Image 1 (cartoon, helix red, strand yellow):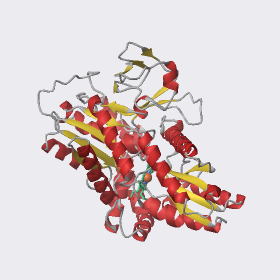
Image 2 (tube, rainbow, N blue to C red):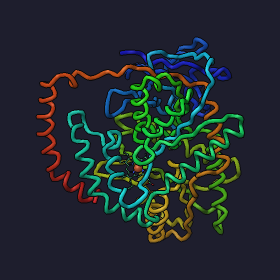
Image 3 (cartoon, rainbow, N blue to C red):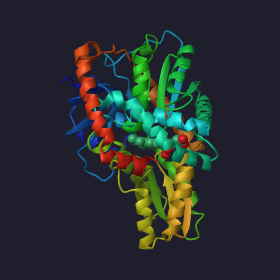
Image 4 (cartoon, helix red, strand yellow):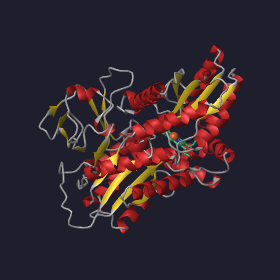
Length: 483
Ligand SMILES: C=CC1=C(C)c2cc3[nH]c(cc4nc(cc5[nH]c(cc1n2)c(C)c5CCC(=O)O)C(CCC(=O)O)=C4C)c(C)c3C=C
Ligand SMILES: [Fe+2]
């Protein structure tokens, strides 16, 4: 197997074995170019050879493509220890480890904000859900069953649409995500301009308009010469940043112009001081609205992912989430706020086990234990969306009040909070010099060319699919969780 090379240590950072077990530095490894899954060794520009004990190189569920995530798995502290791409900036892997660009042409810098996207009208809900469930990073079928991805997405989206529509109807008939993301894009452009960095900012959504593909076409039309990709998810997950970056990687790799554009992907930024401080500001402000602020339980509610992502596929999401909460609480303590806190995961979908504890169960338990005041803090997303406006503000609030909690509050999403936007602007500035070009030729699998192998695959796939669809467990699961 090929070794994965990580290089480009920032000049001000001295890297050593102990640095690798810390997680407070921002960019321990600047550039990386990954060729295949396997052993990982990191070479710093100072000639240090770094071989951390145990590393997981994330691989896309859907193909041989690499995900931009590397997580360190030898957990020593409750905050988790992720580093490399998962904690800093990673650039598209390509044939060359580094490309040193000569600056003979005038730079035209672009920033691409990646987000999930949401239905704008109730009629959009089912097709939006179809796009979501058709994503092989959301519903992860074994290779043999991949041809079922779209029929299954159609089935689940049709079954789930009525329930989802109710949710979207209750928040005004559609998702506010596009509007908020556009506002964030504009605020970021202005923040960068005020830092003497004129850029074009683009918005690329994964499952609804404006799709990532459209944004990339605009980037091409604008002849952008250097690009920073900033997913609006503070923590990395295969299902969010991973999925969006996979799409982007595919487009860039196959395009002669784009594959030459140096790109820098900011995989996660939950550990940035500006973000942590902005979150602490919002929490401390909201605590003040309670009559006895010190008695309030700070309840972090993160969007869940299926447990298998973390356990089997090495998704660093849970580790990063725990570290993020640790850093926010550390910041609050430094300000003299010593409230109790807890973390739970919300919004599970489907029959499989998701990250625990579940938000709804913890709320009931807290109520039973006698907690009277609770401040909910959505922590995996930076804009208001259906899961804050409907799930937390309506469903969970009602459940909490029924369970004995008397005083309920909720911290707003960061949105366009100036300190947060300024920090994103700094993240872009730091990422810019680390950009490298793509240029990996597309490889096709043997199956694509071999009709016999294709026929065998289809035959066994259909056979297994029949049992999967009509097994009592599957039918029960649809009934209980999707409708
Ligand atoms: C960090 C954030 C998110 C993770 C991780 C995530 C994983 C994930 N989500 C689903 C299924 C659904 N998500 C839906 C909406 C939705 N998801 C996120 C964020 C994360 N998802 C957001 C911000 C939104 C809201 C968008 C909006 O319109 O406001 C939905 C649709 C809504 C509904 O019907 O409940 C589904 C379905 C899975 C399966 C998954 C991990 C595998
Ligand atoms: Fe989701």
